[in-house]
Length: 112
Length: 116
Image (cartoon, rainbow over all chains, first blue to last red; front, side, top):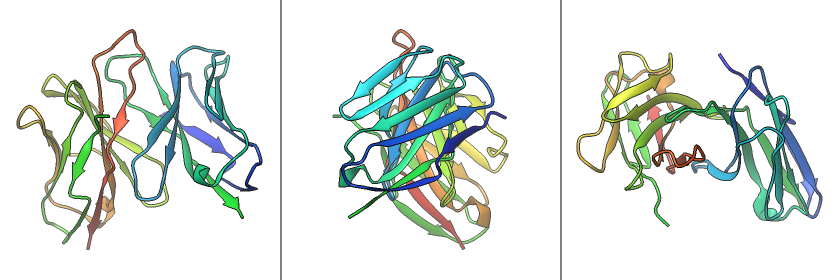
């Protein structure tokens, strides 16, 4: 099956630092999504990318859909304490009811 | 803002017992999903549901699992005879009808199932 690998697995940063994480796939996706999950809660959509090469921002978050359609990255600028959590990428093939294939997650911890 | 709701938030059950997890998708959504997340692992797709039938299911979704939309608002996941390895967080998600291909899935808060 399709596999999405995220790196790094975990990050320990200081408040105010920029963060970068990426996701690579063994196969092509038509849509890339980035979700954040807080402990004990469901994934919350951060950014959706629909076209190869697309670069999209949402506040301090920026994500890009790789040209090969097999990768994506997410950057967070000037991190703040509420950025703590697990970030998941997810890929989707085009179609009306296509499932999401989730990545392995990047756990972000902010050191006080 | 409308959201997906799930009940119960936590459920503890004995191995071999049946459980039903309930979800109320966002009201105008037409596609429904169940995912699960074993503690510390990634979110995994279980099943998708559209037009009152299963659209796709994963290999995890074996004969012990079933889904139903018993009325116009609820969407349920039943596990007939729970096993220890069914312990996980179960997420329901819903999605509106396609609007130019830019539809996204909205997740509920999850039900944490513990099988003893």
